[in-house]
Image 1: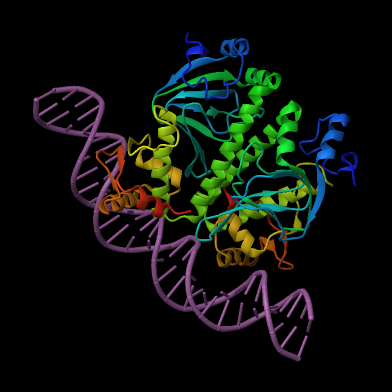
Image 2: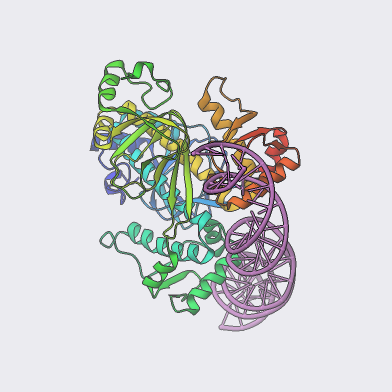
Length: 233
Length: 233
DNA sequence: CGTGCACTTGAGGCACGTCAACGTTCGTGG
DNA sequence: CCACGAACGTTGACGTGCCTCAAGTGCACG
């Protein structure tokens, strides 16, 4: 039964800023849960019964059209918040991409606690506003960028966000080489492309010496400047 | 100098739920401003100096790639909130589509007031969460739907949101005929299409007797069921 | 009655999707 | 430890939906 005191995201998640007495109450309400890669946490359309903080791992938020075309509408990393407080239904599914550890709360308990703790709501508001900014930026990518630009942007964003969440380095750094938490299919789902197109773009970038692909799940950014030029916007 | 008491969005905007004394303070901080159609309120990348409530009219939130391709990332209606509290820079431009009336606040004043009034922050949080839901739903449309589906979805959404914001009718109704606050170019920018493609799809829907186009700015939904089928997802 | 802008319509090209075959990695059981 | 099969990824050939470019057409303005 690990307490919040030892939580690795203690100072970055929405819990930051709470006093130790408040934290004690909150930790009574929550419980940790581990997820295997591929394991779902929340299903699209289900009643919104739980919310959570990501402690470790990467998860996807996805939504599908009636005929089964999937689109990943968000990706969350350690210290990010999951779920939909103050509403009845979940607008999207949440699924672990890697092994993950999350701190889960019953939504109703959390709603009540949040309503009584303005500091927490403030943190949550800031986080939600940031997520909205990021989502809107992603909309431009989805509708106005070419496949080449999309893949380049994706690789750069991955390198930045993994560096942030890994957090062994000063903020502002980005990784030169890293393991993708995504399969090719999932990359396609993030970018609104097909698996074949993603594969072709990756191969092209590799052939041009801009990136390296040591194994199927790992990427090395060789010429970041050029990659940024290609990413554009 | 119209006060908040007589404000038409008084009970729907984030101000709802504030006591009359608090409202008095808030109204001291804000001032009403009218905008002509096409007039900008906030520029992308500018320092975030103001936030606002929409009282009347429709405004677009837009973002562009470096080479000038524009994407509309959101559309706001009466009672909606505009701007980015708690952050330095605006991620997107805000421009009036119709004549509009907004209630403007200096961002710093608003930030301070919000931090001291949990009820206001709570309303803002709910609104932001709702906006995030809507934005994510729109992402699926942008990346996974065909031009035909996009236009159909757009027309249905317009009819719903204009009915809501007009608010002379019970909630849940949608308009059968209405005036578009958008030019063809702007519709294209919302849907991530070109003006020609939008025009062609509209013509097709008209030829098939699903919609009517009495004038270039007005739309009549003749066969809503079929339109919903086409919109899909 | 022109002039200009918003919109429509048409012809043609290209980026990406589709379909299909093949290569590679990895887990499983003999 | 190797053999096998399934899942994942790559590559190629081809089709098509939307974009591009280029003329019209109709409506609103002086």
